[in-house]
Length: 224
Ligand SMILES: Nc1ncnc2c1ncn2[C@@H]1O[C@H](COP(=O)(O)OP(=O)(O)OP(=O)(O)O)[C@@H](O)[C@H]1O
Ligand SMILES: [Mg+2]
Image (cartoon, rainbow, N blue to C red):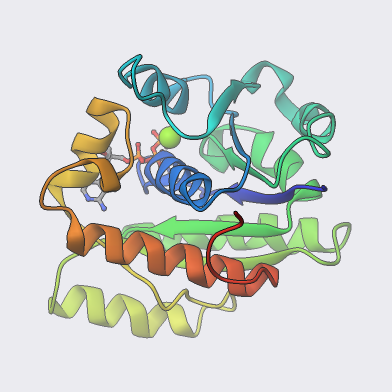
């Protein structure tokens, strides 16, 4: 096996990189794939997320802390590439770190969660440039923007989707809504699947995984 690598990146902090990384990783693992999360952020949020799981039901993907590798993170990740079906790299904000550039050298997909606010959309120009720069070396790199923390039927979410559709990086059809359950997932070290009253959130996350699989050319459904 050779892992498909997804780098979750953005210029700014707080856009939902760790939330997206962990929900994606856990959901793909639940479909029977072997998944590793690379915690490339010195804050260690992905590591803490997984550590918050109960011993009896560990987080379904393994989490490895590689933030110390800095701009050489791509070399460290390569060492695991034959051992996993998917490697998801949770990056620190690109404005503060060389890690995203390094991750994008080996990624198959750059996934960019973005909040539906003008400030966040302006800042996204920065990550677009990083992605374009890395594409000159990594010619098969694909990229998707993904709206996170949307609120149903607000004009801001709708306008954001319209603006981003012309941004130059395709916008994922799936949007992740603002929901308390995404915060609870981190507290309990799980994906939304393990929490009560989760059906709407599960639907979003499963749809995101379907979309990611389509971009990466992977057949839908379970591996085993
Ligand atoms: N869809 C959502 N609904 C509700 N809360 C969310 C959602 N996505 C993220 N959050 C919350 O927003 C905050 C920032 O999210 P997260 O930590 O995933 O972002 P990040 O991009 O990884 O941040 P950093 O740049 O600090 O690593 C967290 O408190 C998280 O629980
Ligand atoms: Mg984070």
